[in-house]
Image (tube, rainbow, N blue to C red; front, side, top):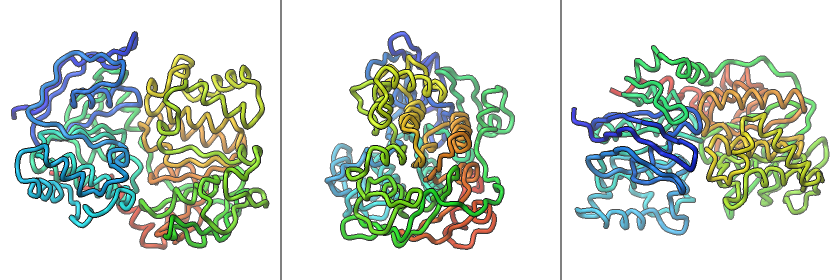
Amino acid sequence: MTPVVQVGNLRAEAGQRTLLDGVSFALAAGQVLALVGESGSGKTTTGLALLGEQPPGVTVSGRVTVAGRVGFVPQQPSAALNPVRRIGGVFREIAARHEGAPDELIAVALRRARVPAQLLRRYPHQLSGGQQQRVVLAQALVGNPAVIVADEPTTGQDAITRAEVVGELAAVADHGVAIVLLTHDLDVVRALADEIVVLRRGRVIEAGTAADVLTRPQQEYTRALIAAQPRVVLPAEAGKPVPRLDLRGLTARHRSATVLREVNLRAGAGECLAVVGRSGSGKTTLARCVAGLHAARTGEVLLDGRALARSLRRRSPADLARVQYVFQDARGSFDEHRSVLDQVSRTAVRLRGLPAPDARRAALAELAGFGVDEPAALRRPAGLSGGELQRAALVRALLARPDVLICDEITSGLDALTQAGLLDQLAGLRESRACTLVLISHDLGVVARLADRIAVLHEGSVVEYGSARGVLGSPAHPVTAGLLGSAVEGMEKRN
């Protein structure tokens, strides 16, 4: 078959750093090629090169040939949607740039991405995460592109939504559109990819058919990536907790809508409470209530038996230090104009009263323990990979020496090796510091690795709550069973 994408000897350099070193591959119409590798391996830089773009300060050379237009599906769909415009208006603006009748172009794109036409009347905030992802895919399909670059399209999605996104991408490929998939999720790769290119430190270290690479990997690094992919393994039965964190009758509202209803949960010192559920079920709102970031709530959040103020502004410095939040969008949580080290060390200054030089030394030591060296820490956020920034965000929270650490989908953008290391470190924190973890996650393999207890949210209510072993081993509610049964690893490979 004639390739629609040809990449030859692609190089990218940022100052003295080599980001890509001779990357080459080809892709035919209707095929899916997965670029996999750890954070910082060069996946995103390669994807940008296909779009004719490069990050600021990066020089790109080599050959990139594409027989047609390239569409792009970003990792965070909300960043690609205009919050003050209805979906339909943006579609019409995109369609006007292409030849053909706009209404027909839009109708075809919606049909191929499986987006109901009634969503065109809504604003982005009125869509679930899965709906936002499908809308962004449909926007990329307007004008019939030859290639779609999909950057971590299932990151942060629950198992049911993830399976739906995989099905939508498979349908797009079946219509003859080539897909370049940038992902750390090998279950998605198994379900979608025809070819795999494994990148490490900007170089192609292994390439071949998906079947060959996944079942007969030649390189030790590839074998380690595959082995590190988390799986749902039933944990030991948890005992009854002596509550450190106690949520009583927690009810929360967004404007006129009730998004949490009478939530009652407990977690002891050194325990992990995992909160799971479909997109839009109220998981992040619950976490924000605990952290004091969502004041429109009733009920109580107690820490060691004492009620915490609803708002951050009303919490003492000691209470601010005791409950820390690590956000899913690590890049969005950093100031782009200041070095990462300055921002991480600031926590120890503000919440522990350390002098600035001592705070910087403590930050550097902690960052090094999480694989972020001093040269990286001295850069601004744009100079770090997504995985490095996520680890830096975790260190920033840990420098407060918290009693409760809220982790909101913090492993969702990480490759399997980086994720495995981070999970080991989080498990160690529970033992060494008796830190209580509140884990918001769609990944039941991660949940099984860390959680003592699991709460399943659906439409703002806790529909199942119990030990991790009990919930994962014998789910009692249809939502829980659906989340467990919709894992991509159980899907058939597309034809």
